[in-house]
Length: 149
Image (cartoon, rainbow, N blue to C red; front, side):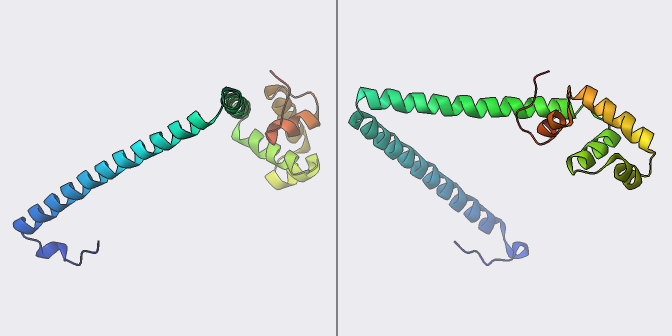
């Protein structure tokens, strides 16, 4: 539907007409959505009737497995985010460079700090993220399976 009226040119009658037309359109849209929903329910019921019990149980089990995997991924991401939120902004900058494979001297030069300060930040990062090795640190930072806290 194209409307080519200037808003300034609308009269009260025009506004009421537009409002009425919009209400009708919304009502028709609601009715259409109800029909679509009813159709989808019918289709789903037919599909379920065509499945035998074993197929249905298998389908439900696969759906549950998928939901469990998705939830586990969500939990891992939430755990990772909680760990990373413990870092200061400077520690996060150092971690970003560690993940990029930069050496302590390069990180120090990048950030304009001393190597000793980078080493201190690195130690704090390892402690806060419960990482024992740089490999653990990379796993956490990259969102892979990491050691549990």
